[in-house]
Length: 282
Ligand SMILES: N[C@@H](CCC[C@H](N)C(=O)O)C(=O)O
Image (cartoon, rainbow, N blue to C red; front, side):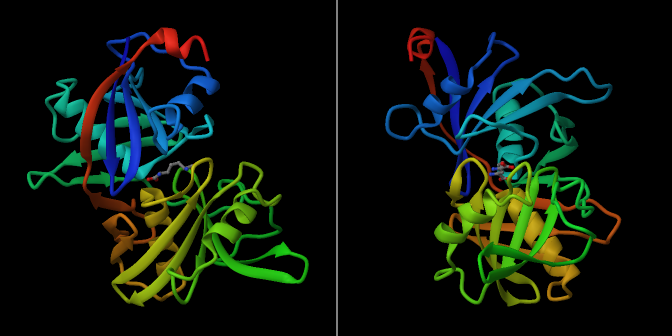
């Protein structure tokens, strides 16, 4: 049997698998099956907990979207990862160093049950996003269909994000524009798409159409990217509450040269196991 835990951060849900104490090698088809909400377990992302070979780093964190693609960062997952390793006795530390494909992040388990994560520095150069454009700018005009352009910010939080400013997230065309921008030819690795509504200097509302998982109830890196883009547009302060469909994340970016900090909940839902015989006979 393959043991897993089901967890979520504001409804962005995960199948979390200990690949330290179990031998785990999953194919794309097996990941898609487990993520499937009808015939599998159901999740937006599948997270693997592994040992890291890096000095002074506690764990390696691997992330797979529901479509089976491996990606390099996930903010809500980072909080659940920290809660998982602590609750399952894989560490006794409150503050851990976690290797991801895009660098080391530092989750801290707080006494109030929330998890605060140093998500690293945002990256703006188009090559780092990656985004095919002639030169770097705070915002870009992106042609989404003949005769129709939208203004976006494009940045990396260890994974690619496009952020649009909208008047009202409730009526924003997330389902229509999300997939168009996600798969836009100027984003060679595709992109997560955030629709941000300004409430005031310290509050935004946000919906995110995630690369490889469609719209989720919350996206941690999306919240970081939206706040950073709002600060650079001059419309947000350095500490912002982000109201997502699943709840609120607190995001701060103390200055241009610092990391982005994200604070929010991480919840265990249930533990389960699935037969390898099922996974090997798809
Ligand atoms: N839900 C996540 C982001 C997961 C990865 C993303 N879909 C990607 O493809 O980069 C979060 O909370 O950050």
